[in-house]
Image (cartoon, rainbow, N blue to C red; front, side, top):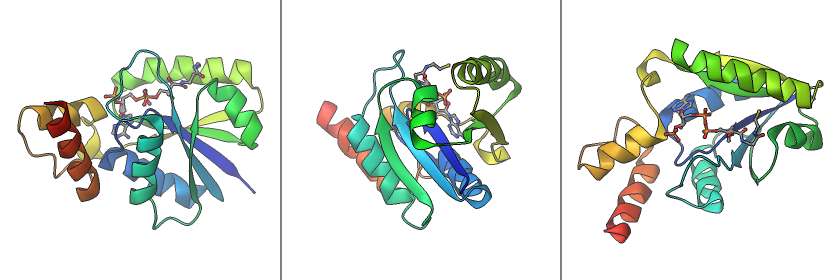
Length: 161
Ligand code: COA
């Protein structure tokens, strides 16, 4: 059974992430989407909340599992027996960073490779921060996130006011 893991901070999951999840889930027997800690970021949602949101939007994909992990990605991949890490590439600007991460992860765990999927053109400019910024300034995020995620972002922003 070929297991892939798709890591990220997913704060929150966007339609761009969902696009990668749907395409990766068709390529592998099992896809584990893992909510991880990115030490450079201060998230809006806790890891458990982010995982719960991911579960809500991936319920239609039976071979997708959602998990949380706070540690090294390479160690997590070994623990779960994954053959590859899936990452989405949005633009050439993503490449250098992703290339560095892929090589570092392979050095840490030679049994795990990285598979890059090109993000669909309509989501090339998207990121979780862009979505939160648009919402914070009163713009519509309907085209960027699922309706249930939109509701949760707006609820959280009202609470923080
Ligand atoms: N559609 C929409 N947005 C996308 C996207 C896509 N297909 N692909 C990426 N993005 C967005 C993300 O939402 C994120 O937005 P944000 O910066 O506004 O939060 C941004 O692009 C960057 O994504 P990514 O580079 O995947 O960062 P991340 O924070 O989501 O995930 C980890 C980074 C968690 C995978 C990384 O920090 C990690 O591996 N941590 C574990 C510790 C470790 O092992 N470190 C050593 C690694 S060598």
